[in-house]
Length: 376
Ligand SMILES: Cc1ncc(COP(=O)(O)O)c(C=O)c1O
Image (cartoon, rainbow, N blue to C red):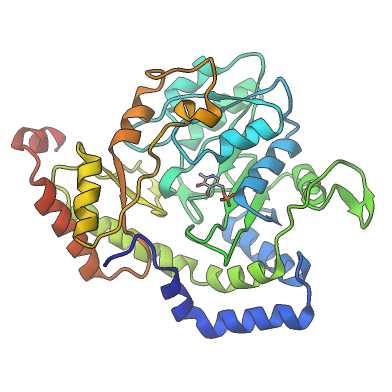
């Protein structure tokens, strides 16, 4: 069986360091925030090239606090995408604002920047791009539009730790970055965790208070806040794993490059990458005409895959909205029918990558010759 993810392999590689890190937290007994969190914040800020990093209890909490710190609230609109995990939409709702979707570019799965301006109204306050699957959104046009319309840019970096756009690290490109350390992410905790990154001292000050009950000092809340603090044990473990993030990311990128090569003539679409970006392949997501059939046959062959995501957000019962209907975002809707994530985790071997590619090749066959030549 080739799994989609092998978290136990991470633990086997780092067992002695992780066990020592956990013991350190017990010895200090600083279980909530504490010195491990402070040290991790400093190290993660340096990794992202930002001035401030604030540890929080999840990526969802990071998005929620970023929106609050940016002053977004009832009556405001936030431009985002309908094809991603639904946390951005959910948290825009938490602050009483309204998500306004623009379709994605089906080649990169990220926000189609040509469609942003048409979605701006006098209520628009922010743009919230998601760096989906580990590839940065096309940030320069987004920043340019934001500057011209005086909008805040909140990056959802949950899937893109260490990704780069034209030499800049994600999380420090827009005004605020929101990371998740959910176990399956490129940098994953042993439970929940998240981080807000920013170069703006005022946003950092607000997030610092909001994550801990709005307290300016203990028991002196100056704003209504939340219990969204990062735990010491998570920070201590994340510090150990952060030291592995670069080699692990390079392993993911090598697997992705191998898939690109091995699947080139196979009748699936490999993920498109923009020029001058560092894609970190949280997921390697192909598109296939008979996605469900391929998934079943791969499962039967012992290869685990996953669908990220089977339904665009505007069609989810929980987030349906009278403004949107089937057909409004054709690229998102088509991708939801065709996407399939195949194993790309860091501990996969080159032989396993070949086995996955061979199996796909046998199951779907070669591209038709005209398609191959027209793509070249
Ligand atoms: C794109 C995206 N945004 C936000 C989140 C929310 O992060 P968390 O699960 O840590 O709350 C996730 C992941 O789970 C995600 O994939």
